[in-house]
Length: 542
Ligand code: G6P
Ligand code: ZN
Image (cartoon, rainbow, N blue to C red; front, side, top):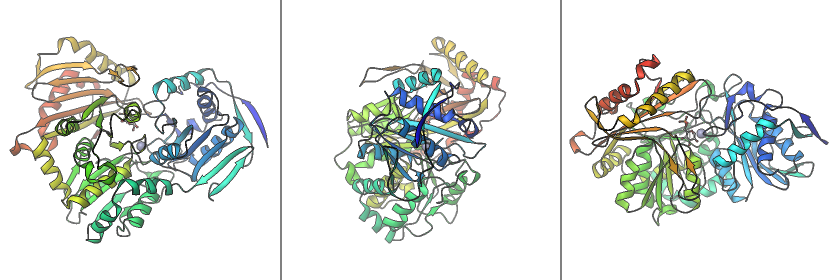
């Protein structure tokens, strides 16, 4: 076994986006491509020597091979130890937890999250830092700059390690520990939630379906829901992780998890249903006859978290990304706690969580989480909901109804226009930016603009600034439209339009969402001159 330095790179475009580097799988498989990116990560943190890393992924195509490559590069760079999930599997929140529990220096997560997997689909690699959270921008910038000049990588010439059996192994002088991907995570969940009470709920005949979407949460959900909490066998659907997620998009939203949504709207609806994404950090919450938007879910969790043992002392504060509805803000105001508005991307919550300024965080993109790890956590959100349902013994529908009566309802929807040519998307955004100074006071579709801006964030902890994070248009009366280009797509550009309208009149709390938003939708189309895209309808409506 010897260490070799191989010439390769630099490769263009290895710029980490909202959540790591995402490319087509075949791009990652090009000789030297993954290798150079991994070497660039190690270079950007002052080398891997004597450090400990956690490595695992969501099981998509190329996951296993990539883990082997990363282990050999880590060993060649002198890492002290690498902790790997059995069979190369670890959910994103489980990586975050292991980094924290084991005081690791960082972690490499192999996933393109909710994007489809397979040789012709997507692959990704994200670097997390020692607090367990995604690398902040200063580090991702440094990684990107390393990728631009890299011309070689170091790799241990060794045969592949057996990742299927637990225990201590090694490559050269680097220890490789293969761990059960579920055990430490399940132990953490048991500390936060009242498992006995949830077991009672299931014993009373409460029914649930959890769609793991053929992705990484299958083993976690089976062990925790069916194993420890006593949910009926068959509660977890699509529990076996597969390299192409059964040919679907492992994205828990009403479009890609339509079957589950159809089920809760049918006569056979279970009491509660939920789904998670490829790497287990997203969630979707459903009840009998109801879909709970991620923004509403964050607000409900903030209002009720004290019912779970881990949050019984109350919350320090709540944070949401800017495009997420303002529903959680009003809960925070009622509870007398602080609330924060950050740019899109979980990494922006890290400082607030580390500083103890917030306990719960959430995003419209189906991410909710807390200070228990530094990633959003799909199964955690499901368990917190279960704990609340077990305490209140109310239906999801009743919980939502009483929440809206108390706080008002933020009707909310996101309209996505996918795979548009980058020039067209940039032209639309630049056009909007140019109009901003003249918009206040103007009316569109019966709504008058009260203020607008291109969102900029000043991090209250480290003073860093993030500019151009999305265009916000606020209307008189509480409606809002936000325009943003996705940072996670791999084909062309995706324009996201986030639409929101606050309703406090009790007789109007139970309308159809798209109807309730009709005038904001129309105003957003007119303001952005959306017809220029030549698209009559969005590809995805959440
Ligand atoms: C990933 C990040 C989230 C973020 C989402 C937005 O899932 O982990 O924090 O909200 O991407 O993606 P977008 O495609 O809108 O940039
Ligand atoms: Zn994800």
